[in-house]
Length: 314
Image 1 (cartoon, rainbow, N blue to C red):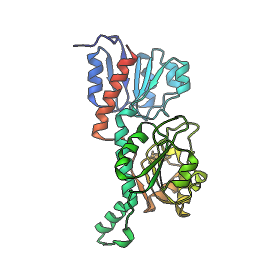
Image 2 (cartoon, helix red, strand yellow):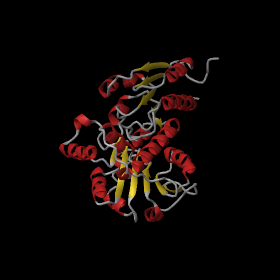
Image 3 (cartoon, rainbow, N blue to C red):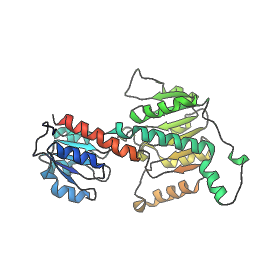
Image 4 (cartoon, rainbow, N blue to C red):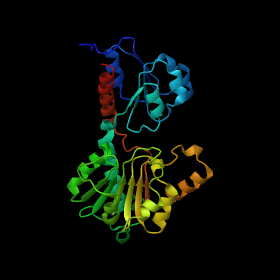
């Protein structure tokens, strides 16, 4: 039975790839949906005045220029979790509703974070490369077990909570710090995390407050050397400071799914130098921002967005 909650004249622009069930569901509800996953930001600017809803991922920044041209826009939603590609304050001024879908990929991110952690603690990628190079090196690759370790989580939103749930089966102590939450499971102070943790996993959104908040001073505050994981946003971490902490033994190894500049062809000279150091260091494991990028999460994100869009337009 076709839903009656949406205006049949409601026009929605989708600017990135998403599971087809979202488009199909919206069209069944009577919406006009333009699915343009190959569109660029300049093209969005030219046509945004036609639309009541806009779905984006990371390639389009919804700032003043787009919002000023989007006279009919009622909502912007992120296909994923991060909202750093939207000017939230200006959207609010324009009475444009903004929402995201972290519920859809939180488990995918959590599983990827766990994979990175198990890999760097047990030298899996290093040993794999050695064996494929006909080197059989065992003692130098002796690993470390998660069991008995204390893990610090910075930020305790959807992905951190999903990660904590996965970690429970490993007999670890979980300490979580979130400046904007109170009375939650695993809650801890930063001071306690600095004192006890030997593993650190970052789960922060990118905001003016969190940008480069994980720097040399932060990493140096830990009483013991740590394994480090970042599956949140690249610019939360000052990468040069991570390299310094690694070289000083404050960080044992790191797994990074995100970088400060993920457009490798547009790196500055300084960014390129840092990137060369990252790829040359065997203690650092890199993946191309795929933590939330699973076949299952693609469908879940579409389901979450469809439900939220319907709620917004009731």
